Length: 107
Image (cartoon, rainbow, N blue to C red; front, side, top):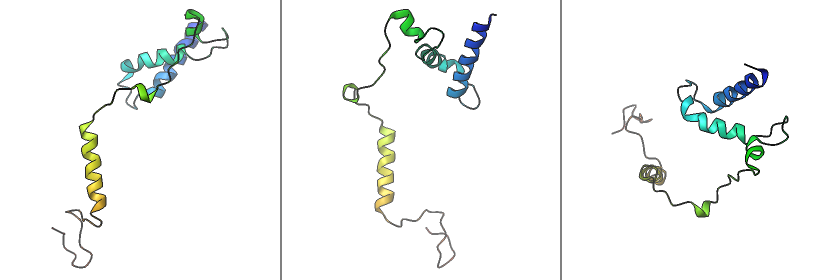
């Protein structure tokens, strides 16, 4: 292996360490993200990104929220409703919280 390949491997390993979980059991699913990041980062040896050097333009990865389709997440809506209910009930006690006056568990 030559020095350039070794350096490239070190860079990709670094990206994977940054993106993967602490168990590092999800590396394969992060390879495309590591490749994308590597190919769209500036390289001093070529004076541009590898993607631009190959295709002649840079990718525009900005997301326009107005163009995204609406996404329904029922679990998130249910959790928000539960949080609202807890907040609106004021001092609603947990079933396991002890009463400060009697020392017994509240029903």
